[in-house]
Amino acid sequence: TRTPVNVTVTGAAGQIGYALLFRIASGHLLGADTPVRLRLLEIPQAVKAAEGTAMELDDCAFPLLAGIDITDDAKTAFDGVNVALLVGARPRSKGMERGDLLSANGGIFKPQGEAINAGAADDVRVLVVGNPANTNALIAQQHAPDVPAERFTAMTRLDHNRALAQLSKKLDVSVTDIKKLTIWGNHSATQYPDLFHAEVNGTTAAAAVNDQEWLEGTFIPTVAKRGAAIIEARGLSSAASAANAALDHVHTWVNGTPEGDWTSAAVVSDGSYGVPEGLISSFPVTAKGGRYEIVQGLEIDDFSRARIDASVAELVEERDAVKALGLI
Ligand code: NAX
Image (cartoon, rainbow, N blue to C red; front, side):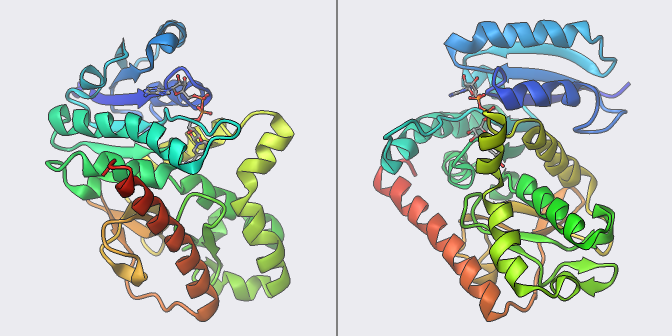
């Protein structure tokens, strides 16, 4: 039998945690032949709730689940970690200024970055889900200088999957008929879902849609504001779909993208497409040999350029704000 992979989930007692842990333990993160050992990190007040979730995990008798540890200490949680899913974050409360939100999250992601730096396994891969995801990932990455920067990523796979779903409905095709879709920029309302490089059964998706008004007036805002629409309808934010996207993100990272396709992930910029080097921004990415790589050489027209630039400008602002707060 194979040695279990150590998977740490922060915010384990939250809604996404509840949707995520059972699927990790049943093999949907790393595959049906890879045993996992779960580490759950929570704040002290939520440790008891995490223990309840762990009891239910036990009660599933998952063959692949090699053990569960629960802790409120980041150093313990990340010791020997192979896959770190950083889900727990400080949400924006009513009347909270952006600076307060960024500082509160800096107080979470700085020590977590340090703990990853101190104790993670050599092959550690980090996915930040907790918002503001791109900038939280940047904070953690900046405090883990001994870990290759490329191991820190943030999640835009949910946005990617939302875009696939909207386009497949519009064109009445299967999601599997759609290739090379891209989410650019920040996981926020400024994100840019790009249909100009996407393909549907061999045609450019934008040409297949052939409806600029739908693209600008319906598609882009529906994808970008889907999170708010879910809250409005469900009374709670996306949880199962977010957990599903986190599984997709890591599964693709480890197992690769199919030939002739790519996906979207927020990764450390190498300066491609005018995105300042070092920012954690969403790009079209392929995965090969366990690494995400930015797809190079795409032509960007003026329509796409303006939207990518606007979202990247927001990321630059967030980075400058956390710099000014002394968080990086
Ligand atoms: P919940 O509020 O249900 O759960 C968050 C959990 O994190 C809580 O149990 C809390 O005790 C824990 N937590 C807080 N600080 C912690 C710390 N320092 N260490 C460990 N645990 C800590 O939120 P949930 O609905 O699960 O969402 C989690 C995060 O995902 C939020 O920041 C949310 O905004 C973000 N999302 C990101 C998405 C993305 O696509 N990137 C989409 C879904 C989701 O909105």
